[in-house]
Amino acid sequence: MGTKTHQMSEDGTIDERFRGRISRPGDARYEEDRIVWNGMRDAHPDIIARCSGVGDVKEAVEFAREADIPVAVRGGGHNVAGTAVRDGGLVIDLSEMRSVTVDPESRRVRAQGGATWADVDWETQAFGLVAPGGVVSETGIAGLTLGGGYGWTRRKLGLTCDSLVSADVITGEGEFVHASEDEHEDLLWALRGGGGGVGVVTSFEYECLRLGPEVFFLGALYPLDDGEAVLSAWREFMTDAPDEITVDALIWSVPPDPMFPEELHGTPFIGVVGMYAGPPEKGPEAMQPLREIGTPLLDLSGPMPYLQVQSMLDAAFPDGDRYYWKSHYLAAFGGDETETILDFARRRPSPRTLVPIRSLGGEIARVGSDETAFGDRSAAALLSITVAFVYSIAAFLFLP
Image (cartoon, rainbow, N blue to C red; front, side, top):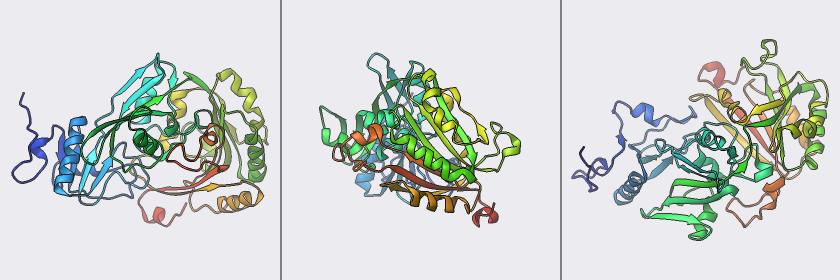
């Protein structure tokens, strides 16, 4: 088997210094390679460097520096803003680097920068462990961690970035650096929720919690007309809820999915959904008050495999659809906020527009604003408005 050299080719390209696959406009797989999860992002890089390992990442960074070209970095490619690709320049693509290694004794997991939470969850659950990932399993670990990271264990474990104990980084100078509490501590601080921009992270190491294979999941869906009562009860319940409980309020319409009764498809609802991050047998009693706010349209609550919880929203956010959303931290959540949110909910432009209100507090709020690059954590809740649609005239106009 031949060995590729690590020298700049005569025409100044990257090809002769790279073991992975280079993709350019006109190549057979270029169109496939440039696509990311959000179909609204239609960028055309000059070069896509699909890295096979750390050596390739190092070579790609050095090439970009020497050629003085702009760079985007792709991990899972699931960022709603589509920052994994760019027009022109170079994309350093880590999506082939998805190895995950678990140390069950130390309760640590190390994963490469292209791994998704599905990759990590599968390996950690084999040992009864959980790393604090997101709520859609196809999300990449890199973007979620560097941005902070909200998942179903957040009130118990904090943000995803709070469980990051070390990382390997290729800096902008092409140097390999290991960041931990013992070396390059300032870099580890920046990686914990700073949003990236300090290098290409080739691997992440997390501390895990013993949890699973089953957890108790709460899924009580109420008529949207009960919105004021549901939000009031949810707000009061979460004020004193133990850290094991993470529950969000969710305004949506029942998706046309086999897990829901067909006669309810398209019905607007306000739900309380969440997970008990502890022994599953303790979940029903702890979360029962949220199942008795009124008469639910549907109650999906019960013990459920953790892997199922982590992937249950995947089908609602398929690759290639168009996505646009905004989020806002709420310092307080009372009557005025409730009235404003419900007013919008009643005139949502599409059944696929969902409004999650995420509960915060717990372990999230115990981390000081200067302890990580994430910053202030004093908000009571996180409000999001998520629009999803396919490319058609009707969808573009946000018609149901």
